[in-house]
Image (cartoon, rainbow, N blue to C red):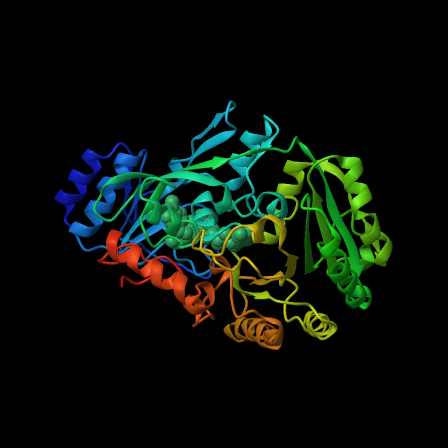
Length: 462
Ligand SMILES: Cc1cc2nc3c(=O)[nH]c(=O)nc-3n(C[C@H](O)[C@H](O)[C@H](O)COP(=O)(O)OP(=O)(O)OC[C@H]3O[C@@H](n4cnc5c(N)ncnc54)[C@H](O)[C@@H]3O)c2cc1C
């Protein structure tokens, strides 16, 4: 890079330009997925929206590929690049709550944990995901499945406005009335349209407690438990969101020693609302399954938000895929449980979540996330230690692909773009139905014809 140009950029910015061999460079380029060890030509840490606009223009002037980093949890490590500019948005993490309207303005580099903590001081919440270190930048532009989804929808369903820097360097304020196409595209179209610098969400008064926690079920009872979940899910109110997760238990209390390291089924509910009512609603599920351990009960929402953070394994190597299911017949359940019994690493999770309710009430063409009518999300995130051999890594990935293939008869063919990984060659087709993709391409052509913003799954200009 031309040192004079870099010096000029640094002089114009309130934030910072970080170059290779400088102190924070190696820390800043770390990703949650340790599989990717990338070396950008420069990392720009903007302090405000004007800095972002300058950086976007600089990257184009010097033909530098541009990567956007918020929380750094991209499944394919897309938020740091090689030999380009990485725009590290983490300094843009302001949270401003309007208590009169229950709206919250959030800098796009904040984590969902930071925002949730600030909102909980007032008994408020925005529906985000299940791991607190995920960034609002990636989860919001992709969708946002989490503990409150059946009551309040996906994260994108609660986005009321955004500030975005487009490829022309213009700072735009978009909502349902201003640049409505762009506002539509950033609700599910990923990081393909510009740098969102600020999100405005509608928050909800949920209080500070929820009724949640897992039923711990051993694998020999898992088929019956998933059958019970399938029968129970259509009867539940919107206040209850359910996730069924197969995972190996960590060697720590409250889990008894004989279950340490064992793959089990964690049947979890999160009821938002009156806690006694939550217990009543969950009673039939509790009665129907044979649980080794029942850890359901009232708990602070922030405990729920952070309870499975340990499953994120930052720095480990990760892969993921997912699909939506139209149904969960006995054959699907038996297939899943057999695959879990053959897991190649204890760091695999298999997650099944009934959707419906508020997610399904949004029309498929209302946002760029269109898979509104799916009955279940099946998510296969896996991890392995960085010192694993290439052969072991290939074995784990093979297991994931085999599991996905085995579940094809029950798949809608659709997938959640944010949870697709490097093995998903057909990511675009699975994430976007043809009409959605065609509209995204047209919007891409209007706002980013040179494809400066290369999100994942990629959207190419029409
Ligand atoms: C451990 C783990 C747990 C997860 N749990 C959930 C969950 O419960 N629910 C759920 O829905 N998803 C979940 N995800 C998926 C997650 O939503 C995506 O990986 C998301 O992209 C991560 O966002 P990030 O900001 O942390 O990632 P980053 O890696 O920083 O960003 C990913 C991509 O998002 C785009 N992007 C980021 N910031 C911006 C911005 N400001 N403007 C425009 N584009 C931007 C860019 O294209 C970037 O490459 C999880 C992922 C992991 C690894």
